[in-house]
Amino acid sequence: MIFKRLHLGTVSYGTDTMDEIQNHIIGSYSQANSQSSGNSSSATPSRKVQSSAPKVRKTVSSRIHEAVKAIALCHNVTPVYESRAGVTGETEYAEVDQDFSDENRTYQASSPDEVALVQWTESVGLTLVNRDLTSMQLKTPGGQILTYYILQIFPFTSESKRMGIIVRDESTGEITFYMKGADVAMSSIVQYNDWLEEECGNMAREGLRTLVVAKKSLTEEQYQDFENRYNQAKLSIHDRTLKVAAVVESLEREMELLCLTGVEDQLQADVRPTLEMLRNAGIKIWMLTGDKLETATCIAKSSHLVSRTQDIHIFRPVASRGEAHLELNAFRRKHDCALVISGDSLEVCLKYYEHEFVELACQCPAVVCCRCSPTQKAHIVKLLQHHTGKRTCAIGDGGNDVSMIQAADCGIGIEGKEGKQASLAADFSITQFKHIGRLLMVHGRNSYKRSAALGQFVMHRGLIISTMQAVFSSVFYFASVPLYQGFLMVGYATIYTMFPVFSLVLDQDVKPEMALLYPELYKDLTKGRSLSFKTFLIWVLISIYQGGILMYGALLLFESEFVHVVAISFTALILTELLMVALTIRTWHWLMVVAEFFSLGCYVASLAFLNEYFGE
Image (cartoon, one colour):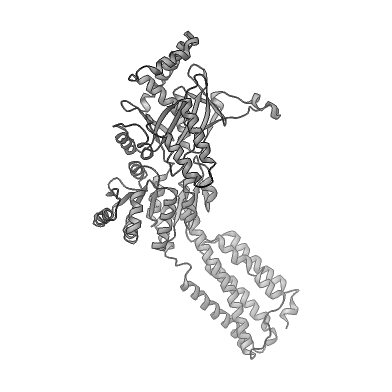
């Protein structure tokens, strides 16, 4: 996450003009320090006179100062300092031993977006140096420490799409309510303006994540009234959540719009070739995100999920059944185009035309669903499972992806800056998106092939000896006489055949390099040809055929040696099993050779002390 743009309505600052913001911050705090040192005794009366004076147009410097201060205060970031090495481990000296220098400071937060914002305020001169449950401290460019008491904090949720904080300045006693959030949530909260919607769209088309920052100054009486109503709402027994939200919304009115921020969410390494590999493997890719439509489209293009030459159908916002019907008809007339749709339009389409929409969307080479809530993401996954009957794999890296990961047949969590929520809730945990290619193309392929071979071979091993017992009993008028007794049955299930059969887990039909180079080979796995009713019946017939031939052959060919029929048939059985394993293997591994000869050696060695079993 990298801070890229700050927009104040009349002026915009990018990465090449951040030094101007830094100069404004240095100038505003140096001017404030000189004024406070010159007339510190009359600071409070002057503030009262200023508050009663008519409002004047703010300068660019003051607007930048307020915007940066709001970004530095409205967050849930906590600075962390590591202890210096080489000190004693006594707890009472923990604070003394810590290094509070800028080089030793790291930031912890629930979202990397907020860390990027706080790191940017540090780069322009306003640094968050300390935070606890009740206060936070900022360091100005001149080294002065400003303390702000945290009166209330309203965390970010996927439903509200915003967060707020009420702080009190220790030096002036002013109470300020800061809030930041998505433009869809903040546009109705801030005062009227004519630039917010347009600039949000411009930043989104650049692929930036936008946040709207606003503030509202409160008097002591206003805050006390709010606090009383807020505490009373939190103590309610019925409809507590709704009452608390109503009290907070009463404060979220006519807020002063300070700025618009743009943060770039950089793609990890090798995202484009990985997505291309998955598409070549015949895997349909849907992108479910909470970003704006323009941002999601830009990210889809930059990651080559949607090629820049490919037609894109942007599903316009629909609010009724008639509008959804018209838009679906327009979409039906297009062929081989990517679909981009918002969460609200998706809800309307699924409500009235669920089957038609899913059928059309599944024919698209790529689908991008933006402005999706976590519940919607999980609903889309279940919808695809129900309508297509295909296996789904959900990949996410944040807490808002947990429900989607758990709803899918296979969940993959990426452990990174978004935290470990997705990683802990998933079936597989990876650290880079590019590892998905190897996870599916190589490990997924080997797992499927080996599991299919091992499962069917274990079935064959049990069915062939059962067939021999059935033939033996039928020849002797279904007498309840066991063919193999005691240690022969134990040995057949363990040391005689176990190691060769289980060595099949080392088999691979193609090398990993070839599987990654030709992802089209993965398409064959989706047809399920390695493990199906057909292969099951083939192995059943092979088992019955081999069991019958072994038993009847031993009885007919060695009729004069009937007393040794147990030894003859059992030896033929073991050799057949070892030979079948050898014929099934595609790529030999040295452990497979060891397993074959070890099992054969164990059987030959056991002939010496199990002669009473073979002699019957």
